[in-house]
Length: 156
Image (cartoon, rainbow, N blue to C red; front, side, top):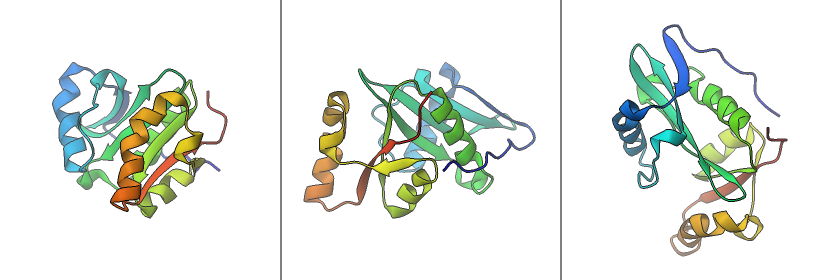
């Protein structure tokens, strides 16, 4: 079910984030209108191209699961396979069952390509029920198209 893995463009590297990347990560996440309140640079991987952080994603650790979050590619660097490359890498780094939440059908379709399937709030591990509780409320009350998903393929 996994897509073929693209290669990094010339002058680009995939690496762990370091403290100097905090501002770039924050700007990418804000620019994508994602929640910036739970950003921990130590949990991020970034793609740096020509000396600039152009993509990021994090694996948040919980007691019995991990959450893939804050996956963003700068608009001018999209459609080059960077999100796919970062997804493959983050999935390979996961050491616990992997979950994510996304907004809208296009993003859910993107994550399905990697083996993620929708799950109900009731199916979540206890540690994620609190975290995803607000999303559940937004889906019910505000009728937002929030999708909670779980990676069904074997995690590493």
